[in-house]
Length: 181
Image (cartoon, rainbow, N blue to C red):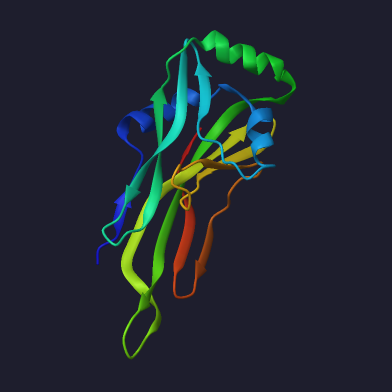
């Protein structure tokens, strides 16, 4: 079966370069890493606009659920978000580069009948999984979608996700599809 490929939409891709040089308040995002509740949206203030990083839920023909990152303009005044950032000024970071993380996965399925047991699915899914944000001070933050939750929140870690490969009956491979700098 031909792999199913999903990428961020054109508006999101065109907006990513606009985030370069934007300041992001890390304190609220990193606080979420201490709890079981994922971040549901991440606002970026760019000039006179507020842009939200969110995601959309998709299901493949064989029932694999996943969330695709999207950027959208938000309602509200940038001054509200800037005031929140000013309160956490010690944790402001300036975005220097963005890496789009791509995930390739193939699930394992239970086979019924005489042979029974787990077998590799014939469905391979390749999709934009999240972002590495690289900051001017050398630090990084990764935002990846949580596919096991219906709300599709963001899992935030204070480290850069590195390319990886794991294969048994199932397959999970992560690479960097594109770097924007």
